[in-house]
Length: 184
Image 1: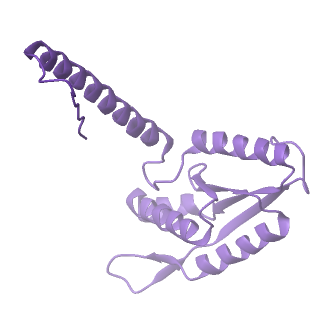
Image 2 (image 1 turned 45 degrees about the vertical axis):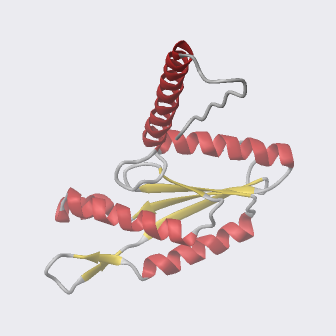
């Protein structure tokens, strides 16, 4: 970025130019530090494999969404997804293949949910989606959409025509229908 300085009553003295240059350098350094901090903070919140929020960041967003739903007397839901037999998959095909599966699942989740929803990698093969403003019926519709999307996905081993389908276990909890406590 640029900083422009105008003087209406004559030219700048050389000491003014030096002082303004020093101020510009300080402001530029502060802005760059703020930008780098923001990037580091964002990276600390993301799972390195899927690019989704990590467990810690998901818990923070979940707590915020729950408290907002309570304050505004609005519904909210959470969806937990677990890839079935993922450990066996990793043991059979290796962790690089497992990472590809996790990336594919993250993409499917992102493409299926609304922009306001908050997807996260919750654990090794678990995903969490926070659904602000969504009650049980709408959350159930999302689960059906996820099942339908996952039914069309699978892992194709390199050099093979065989596709190994994915299966999920999915759970849904909604506020206030199921509970009025976030921990439940």
